[in-house]
Image 1 (tube, protein in one colour):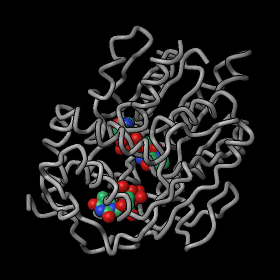
Image 2 (cartoon, helix red, strand yellow):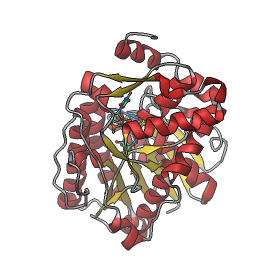
Image 3 (spheres, helix red, strand yellow):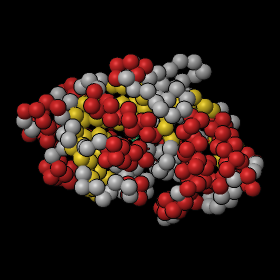
Image 4 (tube, protein in one colour):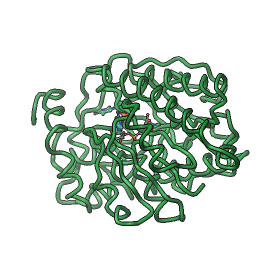
Amino acid sequence: MKKVMVTGGAGFIGSAVVRQFIEETDVHVVNVDKLTYSGNLESLKSVSECDRYAFERADICDRGAMDAIFERHRPDAIMHLAAESHVDRSISGPAEFISTNIQGTYTLLESARKYADSLGGEQKANFRFHHIATDEVYGSLGDEGFFTEETAYRPNSPYSASKAASDHLVRAWHHTYGLPVVTTNCSNNYGPYHFPEKLIPLMILNATNGKPLPVYGKGDNIRDWLYVEDHARALRLVLEKGKVGETYNIGGNNEKTNLEVVETICAILDELLPEAAPHGRLVSFVKDRPGHDFRYAIDASKICDELGWKPLETFESGIRKTVQWYLENRDWVEHVTSGEYRNWIDRQYGGNP
Ligand code: NAD
Ligand code: TYD
């Protein structure tokens, strides 16, 4: 792979993928991103001056723009991460999820198919469409069991339903048109540059600002946490070595209840900012999310056994790095917490407490 097109490269996971490609390989990257509220080019400051990096501001729903970008850059592969990604937003306003996640993926598939058909020789044989999916498409687990690549799809939220639809489109474009696809379904990510609407960054920022920590329900829902750099490494590995038409589950084997996550963050902050301890006094149990999935847990043995992937961070090491990063990167936080995001927070939580 000499040149990879990454959609959603200004987002949380996409920016980690782009930074890794530029910093750790000699691959050229074309970042295609609409820059919605969650896209932030400041996450790419360390690589944006590199001559192997190019940025195209475009909407994946715009067929003309996608065709033109494929023609202009002629990539060897595409990694598709652009999406609306927040479950709570999908509940209060599903329209953008249907448009970007379903219509956008369809548009990109058609554009990629046209482009792939135009290729010849080795470039055609090696072209890949890598679709980045979520474990939330499998629905909710009880106390036992794990999601495998064979688990039936049972999406419960507008977000997971829209992502499931996109996964099915990708599968169909492979089976019907022969588009060479690989798909990865990953568990919850956390780490630096995570937009502070999701559990972990929201709790870190609220706690450092002395604001309530809104835990949904009793805080006993379970998520399987993966450090974002480990996910990005897994994605690069699947792009390079994954078998066409196959799906790989990616997870960190780090199941925690939400309350455990919040308590861990508070304990680290008590250590780093002892003057404000105990941060745990800020925990506030609030109304549960409608249709809240109880537990997600991934069986990642396929990617580990077949491709040799394993995560480098434990939850303990990754969460400490993450808390420290947010304390040391106040500018990034300041910029993303202004504007549109603030309006949404006000609508969601009724303004500052
Ligand atoms: P994110 O919200 O941080 O980033 C999404 C990016 O997509 C942003 O840069 C945004 O500007 C861009 N985007 C949105 N709509 C677009 C459009 N119409 N055209 C072009 N760009 C657009 O999301 P993330 O957490 O980085 O997730 C990336 C992908 O990984 C998503 O497909 C998500 O479903 C999947 N995923 C996320 C997680 C997680 O825990 N965050 C876990 C598994 C899978
Ligand atoms: P989130 O980060 O939104 O990811 P997802 O819903 O995709 O798993 O939420 C993670 C868990 O944390 C989920 O069970 C909902 C819960 N949660 C809270 O308890 N309070 C919050 O303020 C948020 C954003 C999430």
